[in-house]
Length: 429
Ligand code: UDX
Image (cartoon, rainbow, N blue to C red):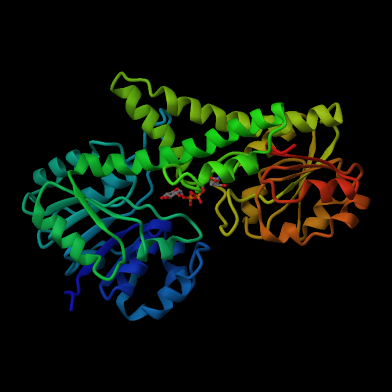
């Protein structure tokens, strides 16, 4: 069989936990380190600090091979491979903030028994070269380096890790690339080996192109509204062209999440730093900003004013099946509504109370029906399946005005209008 490796994973966030748990599932021994004591305590007690389907079970199933610790020595003791899975949030300039990555790299000093350092965090192109120099300077010139970007989507991360479209490994030396490929034995997907910079670019380019597809269909949706075409029909038939593909052509209220906004901005800034302006990507980002503002404008046109109006936000997380509120369109919608002097009532099955606590003039409800009661308008922000189960006929009666903007084209326009709603959606007549 495949040799069992001892792997040190730095960072117990989405990526670190999924990577660590999946490597353990493949049979490796994994120590996951984080600097947050609450997280480590929670993980040790058998809990998972994030919601990700299948992850909790996988961690439980592999608990013999999984250790969670705050302790650096325990993490590195006997480790052959160090995986860097810390977050790289945007800095004030829009460039990725690599401070956490550097603190991990510094902590590897003296870990001369390592065979490879692997960066999974999303980083600007050229970061690997700088890490390489830092390792050389720290007396770790004999330790290999690889970039191994992740392409997992939240809500399907475990499955994406074990059945990826591709495993990208960037390394300057064949032995390290082979070691990382071998570590993934059992994962069902093709391995693409390349140089470090290209591997770093694949991640940024992939996310930017996915975001581009969505912004493109969102612009076509706007044009459909102006010309009477139906974007759902258009997207379906466009997607049947195998060169274009059916995925990421769902029109909506805009893309959000922990990756697309951050990575597209980071790529844009990376280009700016070289003196080149990425025009297409800049437009993709701008279209996405507008998409959220257009939703508010539509309500404003319909109601005359938003001042003093009560608006229900249905679904708050950036997509269904996650508790993640990072760069969620709902955060922009809520801020815009409050700025217009509206009152917000909201519902979401997963968002943490702490996420909406800072919102002023906002009440949070357990059920969508309660959030709709007395509202002058509502917006479907996230396509949680629960919203399909709402008794919309009843809801129409409890709202002050049955005005609904369906930002995800979740509901049926004819049915909603028959129930008495002033119903608006994205790109449908
Ligand atoms: C994404 C990438 O899919 C993944 O490969 C990468 O590693 C991280 O970023 P994630 O952010 O988890 O994953 O979510 P994803 O399901 O891709 O959705 C991203 C955003 O785009 C969401 O806000 C979603 O609502 C929106 N979206 C997606 C659309 O508006 N239309 C679509 O057709 C698809």
